[in-house]
Image (cartoon, rainbow, N blue to C red):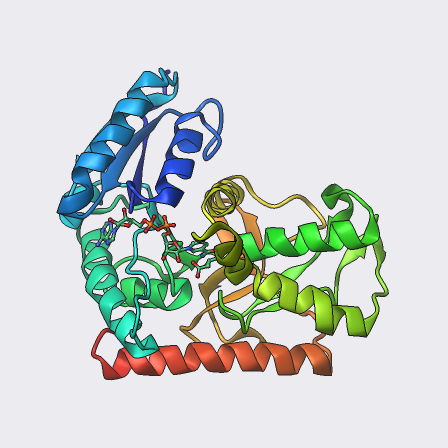
Amino acid sequence: MTQAPVNVTVTGAAGQIGYALLFRIASGQLLGQDVPVKLRLLEIPQAVKAAEGTAMELEDGAFPLLAGTDIFDDPKQAFEGTNIALLVGARPRSKGMERGDLLEANGGIFKPQGEAINAGAADDIKVLVVGNPANTNALIARSHAPDVPADRFTAMTRLDHNRALAQLSKKLGVPVTELKKLAIWGNHSATQYPSVQHAEVGGKSVDLDQAWLENDFIPTVAKRGAAIIEARGLSSAASAASAAIDHVHTWVNGTPAGDWTSAAVVSDGSYGVPEGLISSFPVTAENGQYKIVQGLEIDDFSRARIDASVAELVEERDTVQKLGLI
Ligand SMILES: NC(=O)c1ccc[n+]([C@@H]2O[C@H](COP(=O)([O-])OP(=O)(O)OC[C@H]3O[C@@H](n4cnc5c(N)ncnc54)[C@H](O)[C@@H]3O)[C@@H](O)[C@H]2O)c1
Ligand SMILES: O=C(O)C[C@H](O)C(=O)O
C-alpha cells in the first residue's frame, strides 16, 4: 500500500445498513482494489458498544485494504479530515409521529452533521445521504455547510434505479447489462417517477405497454421499500448498502459511455425542478462529478409525474424552512 488511505465516515454504523455496508467498503468494493481505506464510524452514545463489536469483526476480517477503524459519538470528530461521508443513521418514524415531527427529529441529526462537515471535512469531501427522508435530510445538511460546493451533497436513489433495472429485466427477459438509460426522477418516496421514456434494450428503444408501466412497473418500483418492510419486518438493508456502494463507486469512477444512472443531486433548475432542491435526475459521472443529463425531451406523462414528486420535495423544503432547519 503506497497510497494514503481514503477516510470514509459512516454514520449509523451499528445499524442494519451499516452492518451490510462496512465489510464491502473494507473489501475494496467502494473505491477499488488498489485504494486503502480508513473507516470512521459515527454512532449515538447508546450504540457505540455495538459499533465496537462491528469494528472487532472488521479487524477479524483481516482486510488488506483496511488501514484502521475509529469510532466516535461526536460528529465534529467523525467528519474531521473525511473524504467520503455516508450519512446512514437517521431517526425512523415511530408510532403517532407526523411527517413534520420526522423532519424535525432528523433536523436534529443532519444540521450538526452538516456543520461538522463544513468545519472539518477534507476539501474533496463527497457526501451521500441514505437516511430517510434522504432528499430533505441532504438539503438540511447541505444548508449548514456553506463552504462546501453544492455538488458534493447527494441523496440516494440508486436503490430505486437498481429496482427499476431489475423489474424491467424480469419483464423483458434480458440481463440488466442489456438495459440502458432508465431514470428515477424526484423524491426517494412513493411519489418518485421511475422513467423508461428514454430506455434502451440492446441499444434500441423499447416500446412498453402503458398499462403495464402505470399499473405495475411504476408502483412496484416506487413502493418496493414498503413491500420489503412488509415481507422482512425491517427495511431493506443489504440492497440499500449495495446501492450506496454503487452510488459512490460510480461517482468516483464514472458512468460508462452511452449510459447514465440516477442520483438525487442539487438542482440547478434543470427540467423545471426548483434550484437548490435535492431531487433525483438521470446523471452521468465524470472526473469525480455527477452532472444532470441535459436536453432530454420530456413527454406529457413524464412531466406530470416529475411535477408531482417535485411538489412533494417543495412541501418538505417548506416544512423544514418553517421549522428553522434550513
Ligand atoms: N435512500 C434509500 O434508498 C434507503 C434505503 C433503505 C433504508 N434507508 C434509510 O436508511 C436509514 C438507516 O436504515 P437502517 O436499516 O440501517 O436503520 P437502523 O435503525 O438499523 O440503524 C440506524 C442507526 O443509526 C444510528 N443513529 C441514529 N441517530 C444517529 C446520529 N445522530 N448519529 C449517528 N448514528 C445515528 C442508530 O443508533 C442506528 O444504529 C433509515 O432512515 C432508512 O429509512 C434509505
Ligand atoms: O426505510 C424505508 O422507508 C424504505 C427504504 O427507503 C427503501 O426504499 O427500502
